[in-house]
Length: 492
Image (tube, rainbow, N blue to C red; front, top):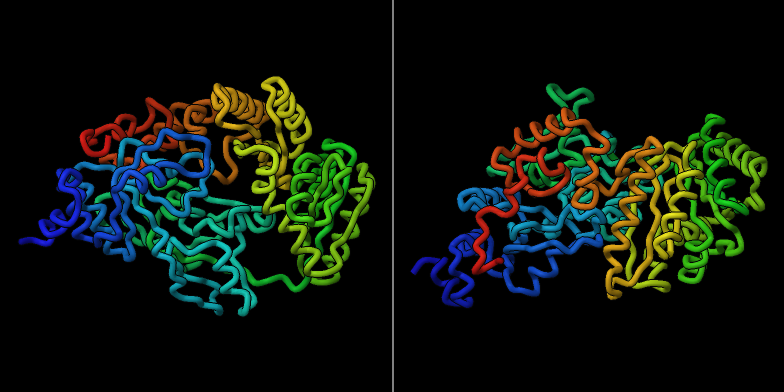
């Protein structure tokens, strides 16, 4: 009796009508291929407000070879695949459409090599973002991209969405910190793109892969640039009587030639929620607060902090506070990075946006966002990466209320168009996924979109890798792939 037949005898025979699943089990192990209804339901969603997902079998590989095997078995059976990290995505990028194989990379979580001299670390995609920085701390280094979900999000997910974070104002988003990638293409071939040389030869396929949201293949090893910890850090908290004054201060600081490590703005509603949740010392009577961090050599940091303080008061700051201790600084950042969790005190659900607008348009766009929320009778809270104009308005709601999701999505569509009309773009760090797919042709021309599709097709000629994402209908080779070859009796 073959191994596959033995497995069939151990599991419900009706499930194994699909030989495809049996082959996956044989290639990995019974405990690392899941196909029960509960597991499929859990892996049919991410942290977004979209619920169209329908997962097929769930695979948990632990080696590159296993990822190769999953790809080859899936190709043999004409089935699509979707890579998944921690499931913290907010744009629906990891939501499986049409019962594909969901390849969960969280068990590939080793830090493989640290090269301090060359400031490079090789990691597997399931390494948690913050765990890498904690590992590097004794060496005096860290990984610069710091999404608010860094306590749980994975490096592989950061690569897929080209994630950012508060400190990416000075350091840049994930793309600036990835040197090379080992990837498994949809046909199972393994390739290394990018390189550790200062100028790798050939096209920048590394840059094309980062931010592709799993549509070009799956990363199995990642060489990241590690950043030396700064000698001195100063964190300032500026209070304002209006959001416009805070936004204008952000523009004025940049106009003065100062580029802080981070500039974060929170409005009064979110500040009150954060203070109630964490007790970080935020003023609850301010209409807006601006958290600014400067770092570098002692003298330069003191000059920058002094100039920011002066600019703040000139533009209407009612108070400027400087964190006096590391504990005080860490508490302020804890408040900022737990802001999304804090809103659970107010409503059970939220829709978090991710558009980017010119800094000069911040105040006007925020006023329009608030008008949209008021018109739809929704609570909105604003917390955002002000330095690079990356807005994160949160629409709070209760999904159990009839018609609420439709109302939230309608308001969200208006917010996206307001941002585009202001000269902005659809995403700063969350990706396109399902959320913004329908608006891509409002940002890009037909020719642009067709070229993007040609790039995708070059990596994935059968269009089986995360189908139904990013490119809008009519421009994607995967328009109908997500619904093909789905054995409805088992997975439909």
